[in-house]
Image 1: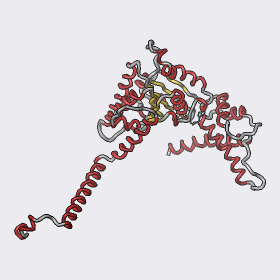
Image 2 (image 1 turned 180 degrees about the vertical axis):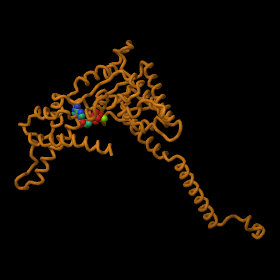
Image 3 (image 1 turned 60 degrees about the vertical axis):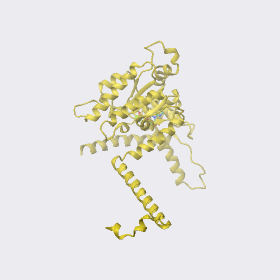
Image 4 (image 1 turned 45 degrees about the horizontal axis):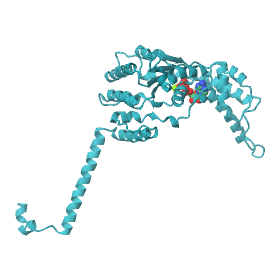
Length: 361
Ligand SMILES: Nc1ncnc2c1ncn2[C@@H]1O[C@H](COP(=O)(O)OP(=O)(O)O)[C@@H](O)[C@H]1O
Ligand SMILES: [Mg+2]
């Protein structure tokens, strides 16, 4: 009907310039709207798409930085590779760990040497590096510190694996990601896969576990066993925990090399204090032995906090003093350390009581 009303010559004649521009404009507008709609729909269907693309970009950059070339990675491996740590960018070294010389020595002998001097150990099956290393002990005593220093000193690549990386809302994705951890590790070995607070990830399995979690744990363990049978692979899983009793017994079996990193003794505390105050201005009369004696039950991180507090006392004095009298911040003296030790002791006991009250409420 509409066609009938149009003059016949209108249909056969070529389009005028304006009509052509109009048509092109409408077509491109339609194209743009379709493009935006499809993108919006894709984002709505998979909200993690953006995250994945960002992870991919970051992973590519990191891989280039650590010198891994000509290795093709799958999409899943890429998202794990985003958690790679470049050994060159890590600042921790054995020099940053005080008072744990025995642990360091043993780590050097059992973990690092078999990887670095691979040719010496090739014929022995017993002298292969362990596939699992567990660092356990109270919080704040240097477990994470030791793991980082090991990776740095050994020149291993380091995957800082967080359980959240492996969880995905889609069924089956977690397993693929778990698989990717191991395939990626094999491609970029020698590597340490570090799982901090491993008890939260691989805790005792129970019947109340979600099916997907249970499958992920089981798969992790069987892939781990795969490392054991491959004598040439240089992949070490290192875990740190404050609660080794919560770990699954099957996991404990896979971590035969264990290091107990205990609360520092008086001698160790003195060494830690020396290290912490190494680059600070401290009065020569300060007796760190005495401070070490007074700080019974303090962890390494408590000692660090305590020294920070003492240093702040000097800054506070500087701020409140008359500018004409004081030109620079004074050095830390014994009295500052004593004050901050007693303050720390008070807050430690008070802190525990306050937390208990919260728990009881
Ligand atoms: N043996 C130590 N030598 C030097 N610093 C230590 C030591 N132990 C703990 N620290 C300090 O305490 C902080 C926390 O230690 P961390 O390794 O994270 O403890 P955790 O055992 O809970 O993993 C470290 O960053 C470091 O500054
Ligand atoms: Mg830690």
